[in-house]
Image (tube, rainbow, N blue to C red; front, side):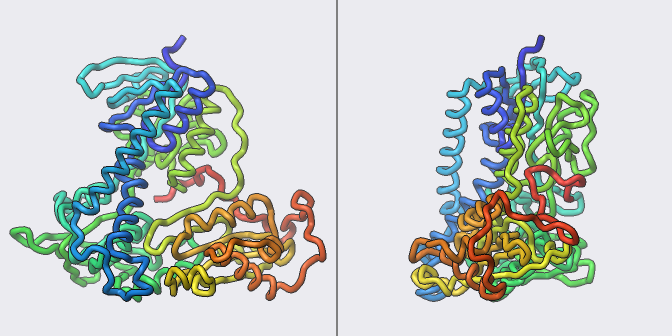
Amino acid sequence: MYQYDLVVIGSGPAGRRAAIQAAKLEKRVLVVEQGRRVGGVSVHTGTIPSKTLRETALNLTGWRERGFYGRAYRVKQEISAEDLRRRLLITLDHEVEVLEHQFARNRVQQMRGRAQFVDPHTLEIAKSDGEMLRVTTASVLLAVGTRPYRPPHIPFDDEAVLDSDELLEIKRVPRSLIVVGAGVIGIEYATIFSALDTQVTVVEPRETMLDFIDKEIVEDFTYQLRDRNMKLIFGQTVESVEREPNGGKCRVTLKSGRSLQAEMVLFAAGRVGATDTLNLAAAGLEADNRGRLKVDPETFQTSVPHIYAAGDVVGFPSLASTSMEQGRIAARHAVGVPASEPPQYFPYGIYAVPEISTCGLSEEEVLQRGIPYETGIAHFRETSRGHIMGLDTGMLKMIFSLKTRRLLGVHIVGEGATELVHIGQAVLNLKGTVEYFVENTFNYPTLAEAYKIAGLDAWNRMGEGPKEAPVATAQPTDTGNTVSPQDMPLKPKKKAAS
């Protein structure tokens, strides 16, 4: 009846995983990508480029060795924008090659072009070579992602006043930078350029930043940023941005009347769903004021049952890792194959300098839910590996239920946080207790030893538990006046974060 079983619009993390999953189930799949190459925002302007830029900056500056050789130590004295871009291009080429090979071996058909709805089952595709054609499909997955929010009063010029996409194309590393927005993207780029010895100022209209992260971790992170002379201005809104004539400095005026100046301004205050070209009305759909789509949190179906959406376009948590799982689940539902429920906990990673990663409940959420608890903390400088690496910062925090002794949350700031968090994630999903960390052996010397140190810290405060740890499947859960650990699934919140 239809040409395809599933048409996927967008080839980012959600789109690629959905297409490959459906193809492995022997369905006819078409991926439509309007970019020059497959990969979507994640590969070309988002996840991969920003993390590659971070790694390049840390390597060329010798950031990781400064604990031994001092803050003036640098591997390369003069670091240019071309130095940063060279590694980026190599990485992107590799990512695209791997993705195209995955599509080819799974028999996923690709098409370059821009798609829009003609009716709920028909799509019109304006191909990159100018040809127009129509295709019919039983189901559609919208995985179009997001793009930077660009308010009209900000004079973007692709040179000195930039959004996060344009920042990757800079022709010089600025001596000073003002970042508007202290969300994940703004903070990541602010700390990367700070590591390049750029003088960085961050302006955020809220009184705090990264509110979904454990407050103690954010406080430690904030101290580290200010210790290296980053200026953080909270509770201030940008009134205007102007650039001096003849390529001069940029001047940012705040509503309070305060004036700031720098060589470059990065506006990173939010993103919008890339849904405006899809002609959603023809399919009976409507996006919110930020271009995002509301979906069923179990199946990722929109209000039109055979049309699905996944990834950043559905809002929180907007992670590449969760987007992949959303795409896989949506694809299985779309082709009529049941999808298993994903594990309860997933990690959240912020690739700033230093890294932050978290999984499970924060201390504030534990307090709000009324769960009796205790915490254990380890500082990286307490580990032999930390001494070897020259680390004088970094910490790992775990939260345990006093009633069941189960791990409720793990929160890390410091070198390797996004790798270390997976140990805590496994223990969370397997309903492990504090005894796991106390009784187990970790490789020596490693930063993972911090789990044992933090576990002992909590165990000493909690007192000795049962002589034999209860079997995981038979452990009681927090009930009554308490609540079981945080439900942080791969599903969007009912109300998408702005």
